[in-house]
Length: 139
Length: 139
DNA sequence: GCTTAGTTGCAAGTCATTTGCAGATGGACA
DNA sequence: TGTCCATCTGCAAATGACTTGCAACTAAGC
Image 1: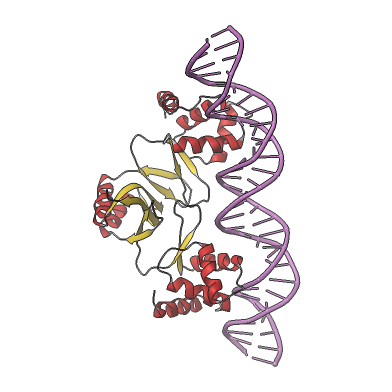
Image 2: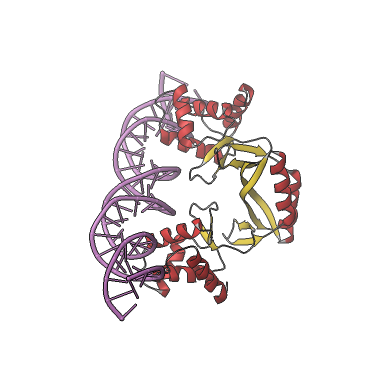
């Protein structure tokens, strides 16, 4: 993510009525600059590098608040802890490389469309979804 | 699930080299007879009804062992605890009704095929996947 | 500048799940 | 049918991710 997207995050934060405190700015900066999917400990590590003394609990609280306001997305892959990314402008799904833990984003309009169609057949409307595909390199 | 599927579970358990102890039989029976997606506490509740005195830790250990041997499937939906079902003969995905918590199974060969295709384009082969669609009733 | 509701640090608390250990028990084999 | 021992189990204590109570702090509207 670029600096402009960081500004955008701060902007949206303010619009959501959230106070832009020191810790919060540091956390937003880290989120904006991360293009991976860090967990809370990792976020905290990166945040403390920018601005020491920020508590882990603060990162937990902030990331929850941001998720409530849809400024970040929370993922839970198969490793037991939650991972975060700045809310992407357009929805995508994830490949998780089981050998390396690496996460790769992808998007398929075709799959999205099929989901809609099937949900409809069941009499449901989709609130949200997650598609995680655990993969390994081709032999 | 029917009685014959319970027998099948015991059969497969034995083939996997697992000992068919009392507690384990009770747990297998409950799993075979459940057609929902109970969490460990709920499994434990049902197991204790058949055979009192079985410890919660035993249920945890047993479902883990069964999952390792692919005799049950472990799901983690958005409610914080793991839920289990006897390994289905054929893979399916889940609708989760966000208003009731109810889980409905579905399957789309078309989606499965698309996943294969996309993974291939990325140079991956699929190890497993999960597609959870959070839904509500149509307005 | 003053005020105050939103934030924070810290430490203690939850809650699902795991684990150490000593005693029990399937089931292979004699 | 009895013996043996690796696998299991119950119990209680530990873990690990995450949350929360509380008193002190601070952004931002006035």
